[in-house]
Length: 250
Image 1: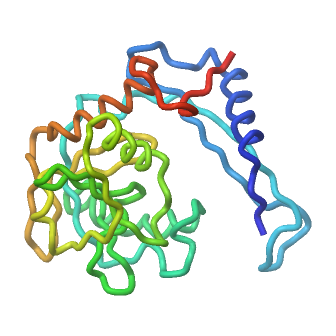
Image 2 (image 1 turned 90 degrees about the vertical axis):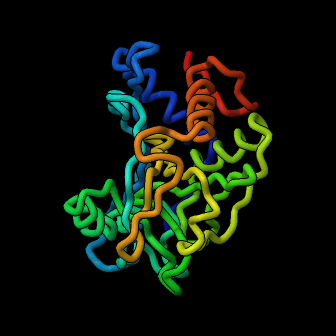
Image 3 (image 1 turned 180 degrees about the vertical axis):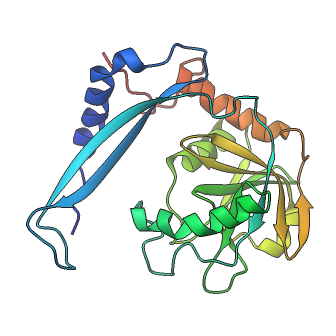
């Protein structure tokens, strides 16, 4: 099956592609960035439905503009009837098929005026799993950072970074547990987190024809904003980073 890339080789590949394209790194303070996309594909003389005899690992990059061109604004999501990943399937692995399964539900949500879908667990359709291609988090009324726990959720470095920031920088309790779709009242703020946006504030979630509104439909919640600002400040070098978070490209 697909081999695991050693961490040193993975990081070195990222460094090499940045060095080779340093003239594309956007200026500091623009909100733009150089997006890195590592990937691995099967190669070799194989047309059958079986693992490839060899694999190629590569990293490419692309300059991208600010994700929130007009500033961060809350957006609404709708709960999907479709399943993104099956129990004991590939949901917890970053493979292309997971994204393919989300394309139709995404288009249907957008046509109805929503930013994307909320996917529930396939077994019971009662627990939140993912938000489009991002991870969900909520801020409870007693100041806890809560995010779903499931083997079919893709582990997110952004989510785990925010969990660390919530605990170590903001002094919050952090919980990774089941989040039930009919218990949204426990949260005063909510968001979707991932590489591209860092955090997309969730204004509301539509479920069974009703829109549950969190902090605001027009303003970002104060804790969500603090989480976002802190992580971006760490990325930019304006805030002291935990050990191992920053790799200098020389």
